[in-house]
Image 1 (spheres, rainbow, N blue to C red):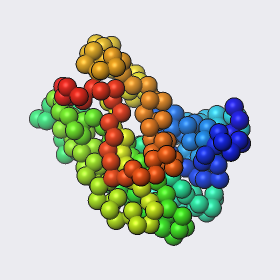
Image 2: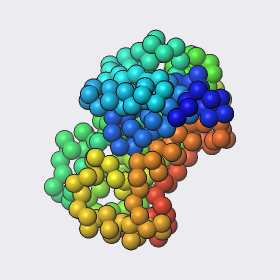
Image 3: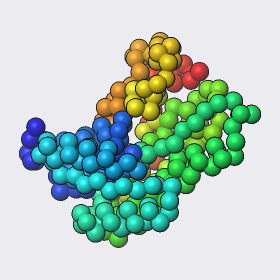
Image 4: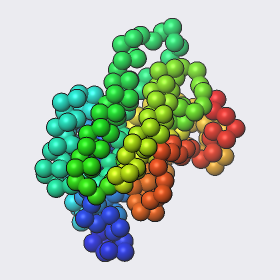
Length: 259
């Protein structure tokens, strides 16, 4: 794979940050950014997974760095973005993909469950966006930010009262932030996947995958690349006039209503 060709590397010379980059959609996005020529900063809590992905990128002729961080920790988020700029000289795009999840009947869930999910999915992403915007504005060359939302933000399903609410908050957040930062050439969007085959869902019952596939227009569930390709695209100039959007990447699952 040639990552040096200008035509094949529209993101050459740029730096992309990917949280939750050690596995699943995040790993696929990290590789996707690298294929388009970007230097990729892979972020997550498990160093070994991050270094493995960075190693994959290096082996393909790309450039990558692994930077462990807990995005629910304000100090670590601030240090992360500062460290990216200090180490790589710039920050052009970010895919805020790391997330926490849980599920169950509302009466079985606790405030601790609520706080854990919102600490990562809402507060953590908000802190990342804040620091990314500060860095991009200071550097003065615009930028693109993408977050991972979910079909649960716009549909409905039993057991997702906390997770769905956290993703709904992201959908509202990008609309407001887009208005704040658009004048600086910074775009912000969400990708909203449905059920995706990742390490997080590997233990889900086969019957669940079959049911979702049957309800999906394209008759299958998503693979990580299906979602990551959309996230990477949103960071390219091909999406230069797209901002403030939450784009469903669900194979048409939500057309007939999520259930």
